[in-house]
Length: 135
Length: 185
Image (cartoon, rainbow over all chains, first blue to last red; front, side, top):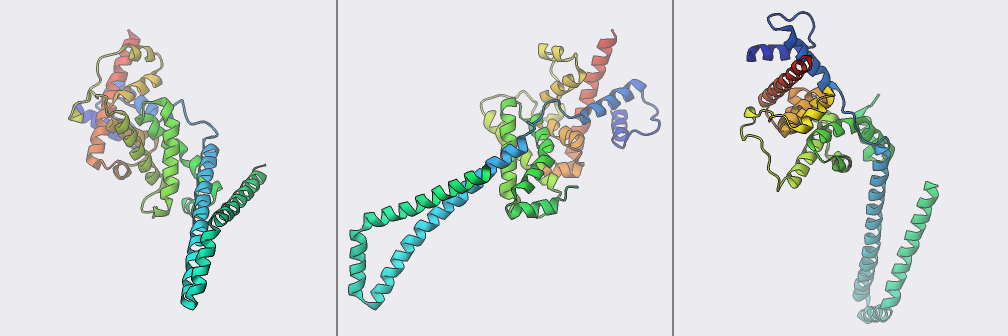
């Protein structure tokens, strides 16, 4: 019985062409019916706009990631720039370097505010550009 | 004609239209796998999305060592298995430890109701089977992968896949025969 099933399944796997002997026609028909049914796609599926919805979601994710990378690198460049300037000044003239440090420290909130302003303008500009391209 | 190498290279340079065409090409494959493995209908779409986000993320590492469909099917399979593991922590499965000993349990009222439509009845029967039977039958018959490809997708040895296919189909055929006999009475 098991051997017959095995042979029958193999035969149907290869397309079930020709005549298959030694096995009851009911067995053949049941297996043939099963093989046909197993190939049928399920009645339910994903929504028709699945691919566009997913792409839009992914685009948004990638956009946010690259924006975040840009803001972090801007802040990093600002800090590295200041440190390098201080370092260079220190090599040339220690007094000037200390004056620069004192000036930056004295106007620290102005510097921070300027940085925030630059980033905000950049962000608003990006958003306006994005709105324009979407409309 | 879908040229997978061209589509992948376009995606890698940031072309979202190419990615959308990839999703359209493989959404059925992913859905068939998720639909057969994840019982919670409300989670299926989210898991399909998760699969494609993983595909997009891992695409730079895809080296064309296999067909793109095989690679995507593996991601879908592993994502579904992770979901099942997370959700079934507190649930008991009544499958035998030795999967070769699996048999359908006696009829439940739901099964009797769905018998009216044989296709639906078959779906109901498949959903009662252990995951390994379900995935091999789905990948082989619905997604038309070979046994060797199913091995690289699931990690189950090819000979075991053949056993699961044989036993699964035999069990389903017995149920169908039983159904035919009942209808004739």
